[in-house]
Amino acid sequence: MTIQEIEEQIIGEFANFDEWLDKYSYLIELGKDCPVIDEKEKTESNLIKGCQSRVWLSCECRDGRLYFAADSDAVITKGIIALLIRAFSGQTPKDILDADLHFIDVIGLKEHLSPSRSNGLVSMIKQIKAYALAYSLKQ
Image (cartoon, rainbow, N blue to C red):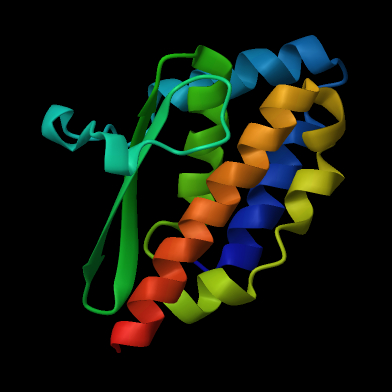
């Protein structure tokens, strides 16, 4: 599936909930399905700077596609990174770099997060795109 197709899926899923409390609960559920980073990968270099809670993100390239794993010490934050991994994992560096992530605005995620969590979301996206840029330069 393309990033755009995944985004549309996510928009459809979040449209099933009227209240943001229900959307937060769904985010927490998504976090439970997050591809978990190996304990040995929970290093300072994999820690995303700019997040209120601790978020580790690893990336590996297989057959020209990037695959992500993560973990966080906060359940909402883990749900947010799981959502991003769902959109980006298995995609090419170019597709990741070109993605506009309109689904974040459509589902209202940024506007319903605290300022510190919103900054964390931006930091997560920047880190994912930094991995994509680094791997695109290697190709």
